[in-house]
Amino acid sequence: MSTSTASLMDGTALARRTVEETAVRAAEITRRTGVTPCLATVLVGADPASVTYVKMKQNRCAKAGIRSRHVELPASTTTEELVAAITALSEDPEVHGILLQHPVGPHIDERAAFEAIAPAKDVDGVTMASFAAMGFGLPGFVSCTPGGIMRLLDEYRVELSGKRAVVVGRSAILGKPAGLLLLGRDATVTYCHSRTTELSSIVQEADILVAAVGKPRFIKGEDIKPGAVVIDAGYNPGNVGDVDFETAAERACLITPVPGGVGPMTIAVLLAQTVDGAERQLGL
Image (cartoon, rainbow, N blue to C red; front, side):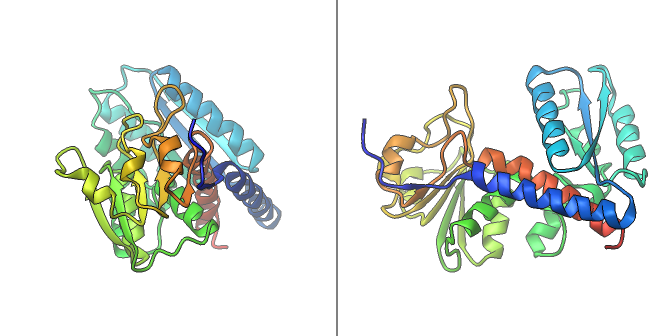
C-alpha cells in the first residue's frame, strides 16, 4: 500500500463542534422566547436507506437541542397530497425548518414538492429560491452538502480567490450549488460531467477538486495536481468515495476521507440552518 502524504480534512471533528455550537444557540433561543427550534422531516414510503437517514437526523436533532417532527406518508401518496402536507408545515409557526427526504418515488413531481417548502424554512437548500440566492450571493439557505464543503475549506484555511476549482458532477443539490458557492468566493470554476471530453486533463489543472459524480474511485491519483485540495463528496457501496483515495493522497496536500469527511458536515449544516431559520422567524 502506498504511503499517504496528504493531510486529512476531518469532517467528523468539525461537524461535532458545529453541532455543539448549534446546541448553544438553540438553548439561547429557548431561554429568550420559550420556543424550541423545530425541524420537520417528511418521508414518503419506507425505503430502508431513507428511513435510516431520517432516524439519524432525528438523533442529531436531539443532540443539538432541536425538536423534530416526523411526517411519514405511504408510498402511494400523490404529488397533490405531498404538496398539501408540506404546505401545511410551511404555514405552521411551530415549524422552523422542513426537510423532504428524497428520492420520493417516480410517480411524484419532486420539484413541485420542493417548491411547496416556504423559502424561509428551506433549511436543506433545495428550492429554486435558495438556488437563486446562492447564485446571486444573497442571504438564504445553502444546499447542505455544498455548505459543508465550504465550511471544511474555511476550517482548513484554503485560499479560494483566484484558484482553479473543478467540480466533477452537476446535480442540482451538490455539483451545481458547490460550483456557485466557489464562484461566489472568487474561484475560477469549471464544471465537468458525463459528456465532458478530456476529463483527465481538466482535473489535472484543479487547485481545488470537488468529486461529486457518484462513481466509486472514478478520479485517479495520477490526475491529481500536486498540492491540490481534494474534496470527495461521493459515497458508494463499500465505504468508498468518488476518488481513489490512496493514490490521490500521494499527490494532494489536503483530502477528505470517506467516510468521515464531507458526510458528517451535511447534517451539521442542516441543523445549523434550522437554528438560523428559527432565529429569523422569531425576529432574533
